[in-house]
Length: 340
Ligand SMILES: [Zn+2]
Ligand SMILES: [Zn+2]
Ligand SMILES: [Zn+2]
Image 1 (cartoon, rainbow, N blue to C red):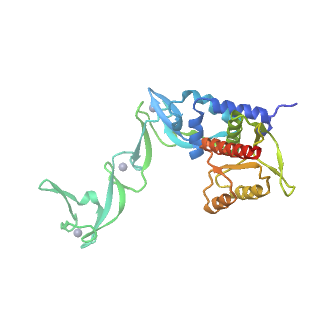
Image 2 (cartoon, rainbow, N blue to C red):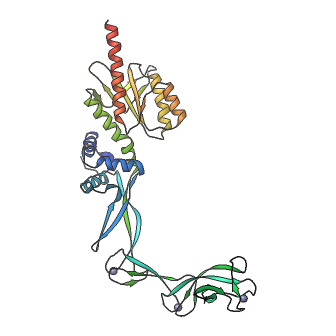
């Protein structure tokens, strides 16, 4: 059989092995938590001793997880995305780059940012620099044309805008030229010569999202049930009272005949939640049917509650364990009552 790179072609068993391996890795909980919260791992940049390091801010102190991330990329669960762009020195690669504004007429970087002021009384308009005067140790504004002092903005003078004025050629510059100066090697360069490189983060693919929301929880629930002594049955279709077969995400039976069916519903998948209500009504009352979901919609939750479907959030599978133990005890109670 020809090998294929499609992640969907991975057999169910290998997939499960992979998930178990993932869950068992140190740091996986931290990665999973960050991915569930933000769906991505954002990059951060560190520059030490002339060496640029890009690391994922969410995984600080988890150096050994890099292999894990590599595997998740290989399996199509994560993909790199350009998260940020950085100016780098074309000579030495440093990210410590100063930005300066340059006069397009004479090349000077001595540009002063100033306001354009209009003296209301005489109408004279010029940059603020030309209104400034020092009187008794204080800077005041004096109209260069009529020599009257200016006191209050909006009353005796108006500000018409902001502009740069070149200290060397005295020209006014609305849009200065941008130049960069490397703080490490001193090289001066324009945006045309700069290195402008993407910094990559990692984000969940659609498949990765489904994996985090569902597959991972399915595997976790299955392994929990196995640990509790249940026999997990794969690909089971439960025949409803109406005769319609129902698929569930996890189905397991205990030796003493307790039947557990669990469906995992994504947080905003209201349609699946409503299907669960129909399923509950149609399924044999002998089967304990539980939903694992972070659903928030109140109407949906009410509908589930009135159908007596227990619902537990995926992040607290301990709660699921308790729910199952309750079902187990309730059954034991019923069985011993029948025997008496
Ligand atoms: Zn100039
Ligand atoms: Zn004036
Ligand atoms: Zn440099």
